Amino acid sequence: MSESVVDGKQEPKQASKEAKESENAAEKCSARAGRGSAGELPYAFTSQKPVKKQIQFAEDKQEFSKFPTKTGRRSLSRSISQSSTDSYSSAASYTDSSDDETSPRDKTQLNSLGSTDFCVKNIKQAEFGRREIEIAEQDMSALISLRKRALGEKPLVGARIVGCTHITAQTAVLIETLVALGAQCRWAACNIYSTQNEVAAALSEKGVAVFAWKGESEDDFWWCIDRCISMDGWQPNMILDDGGDLTHWVYKKYPSVFKKIRGIVEESVTGVHRLYQLSKAGKLCVPAMNVNDSVTKQKFDNLYCCRESILDGLKRTTDVMFGGKQVVVCGYGEVGKGCCAALKALGAIVYVTEIDPICALQACMDGFRVVKLTEVIRLVDMVITCTGNKNVVTRDQLDRMKNGCVVCNMGHSNTEIDVASLRTPELTWEKVRSQVDHIIWPDGRRVVLLAEGRLLNLSCSTVPTFVLSITATTQALALIELYNAPEARYKQDVYLLPKKMDEYVASLHLPTFDAHLTELSDEQAKYLGLNKNGPFKPNYYRY
Image (tube, rainbow, N blue to C red; front, side, top):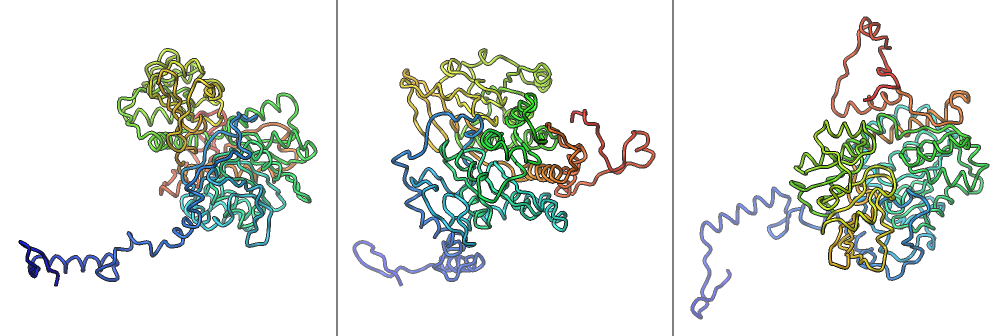
């Protein structure tokens, strides 16, 4: 029995009846919560169960806790490519490649299959990556369904796909689907900061040749792409690209390989623009599929995905309260529409800039004031670009922003904000937290720049897995279509995804919501001049 000191004397401390009852009740509660004994904490607060994850972090503790003391191959210069440096890593990533000074190019790593045909940050992180992929699969049921339906046919047998996309858990599900359908794949990252290192390790562990890590330099970026293409005894016949860098590299450096490509699938506005330029110049010698302008990409990835991820990215980086804030959104395409809707719902006062009178009229009808950026640049608390253009926000406009103005980009390319003009001796860069820099003017005024003007949602947060399932399923079907199409079906040009394929992608995702489609009767189908099984809209229909 414990003792207490009262007035300098020690005397027994009697436990009251209520205290004993409280102790007994606590023991009963702890037993229900999973305590082994009265002295142990419940499972949720112990380190016993998730010991593997803690061991992994302990092994890399020093690696995570220091900043690089030398730049190695890293460079602050702008990339020759407009899309190669457009975002940082997803916040879901456990690792930060900038924390380790050793370049993966200087390491020799071996996976459990005995292969060294990959280059990732740390192959030992594969177990974490596999968990990420398994979690993503749970919300990508449509893509998994497609994988199961086509597994027997293996429509991609003989396809040698070289890919350049964001390497995240969601794109890993796509890559493994392509492999399951018979394809051989080699993969690089479409931007230098978006790779989840543990996911790249998990893919490499399964035998996919991945050359990517978070924090690549420009030299690393192009080296990784080149390693995917220039393997002895292996030549790609299909390209899956996001941004056009891979297509550009093959076209410029490997023209003989480019001529033998059976099809290109491109998902970004930047990459599609490059393809149309090649086509217009008569230099596109292979058929290409424009996935970016498919309905399933435009309406779901661009609109609904950005509507959710814009707030996530801003909240994580700035902890900002949106109510009453004045925000200008540059561009009212699908991405701009999603951003504006989200900001308006939380009480922000939203302005829109536009060059297109149709989009401008839509913004007006949706209740937004359409202005020129120069008219509100001194007033607004946030500037968000989503145009896909260059120099949307110039140095002159940055000079006139109010103190504390937040500037970020939701477009694919990193050229929308003139970040290069801010790297001058008179301005001070102060890194506040990951992907957040304060640019300080000589008079003390500061602008908050997120992700150095790169893609905000993949830079500072995550994007909804379900939406990426829609895009990934579209990409997989486009690859299958181009690879298996008769030679005369597609000429050397850029094509939109067939309407029937768009509808099929949408139908695969409806069971998630327990949605039930109404079926046309024969009389109704005849009246509308439609096939009962679709397509239900003409190609010119605007959803």
